[in-house]
Image 1 (spheres, one colour):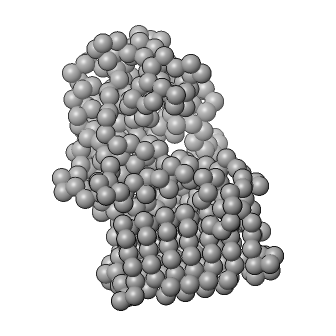
Image 2 (cartoon, one colour):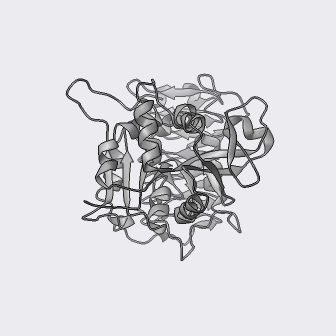
Image 3 (cartoon, rainbow, N blue to C red):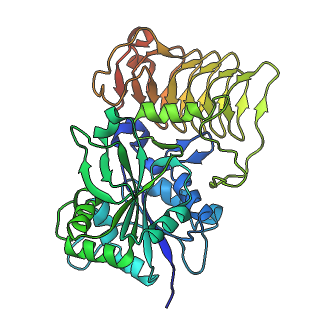
Length: 424
């Protein structure tokens, strides 16, 4: 029988609907980050750097890009005969076909997979956070405290605590109470959605609560373990951790990479972030190009000016084009004389000549002000923008747009232009 001390279950099925058009055609963990990576690279790299060599990746929503990216796990050294990485989509069962309905339901449906490795411990991770963490240190803490469940927590400002599951602990770190998104939080220790369970404890909780609709860790499994008097401990993490769940936080996390002293360092020798890399030529910078405080991916050609931006792979930025405070993802073409201000441009977009993004005054977005805000311009994947048009702030554009879609060559701040057949 195969025996692994700890295996990881990585939840990567989320749609990430607050990222709007960026996740219209792919799961949130597959979204590009930092000019070179995808969000899922961070937890996968943490696993291999922490000595966890068996990872089940649970996919569901729009998994194609994610599956292609992970492949057989070669970049993360997870292509193993025993263990390694396994993609676990929902599957047809003899009685009925069942989608994963909640975080814990997804794990429950893969009990057989976990059983194969006869583990002592199960590490549960989310596929959509940016951070570096040594899970081995957390496992040592779990063993030292003789815990049944350890929950990674981090201190947050008390005014933000109501957005999280909050843990109340005694002096030893033992969890005495917890509250899911409390109106008046009594502690600032927020759950990071990272758990270590003793295998037998997790199995019992999942089987007991299996009938619960939309079975969830925060709402059902953790409360069950607490009610049964099990030992729950909070493992405090004080490093960099970012939930890039909104366009603004996603934009901000990318911008933090180019600070003069970045809070999150991608260049540490001892804790590498691995990703699937294509064989691409080096960047080409023309003699007229200007680049300040930016990250530029491989295979990119720059003939214009780039300030304070994150540019992906295989991008072409035309002559006299200006990119400022923006994220330009892979395989984008920016025409001559175009200007992008505070924009997020998804993959495979073609921006025409003399286009201006981020024009005019601030106005709330007409369809989804909760998603498209913070003065950002968001351009969805495979969008085409014709020459010479101006697009305002808090706008979202997706699809093969034509000059007639822009009355007087402009769409005002707060507009939504999504062509038929494209979903936001």
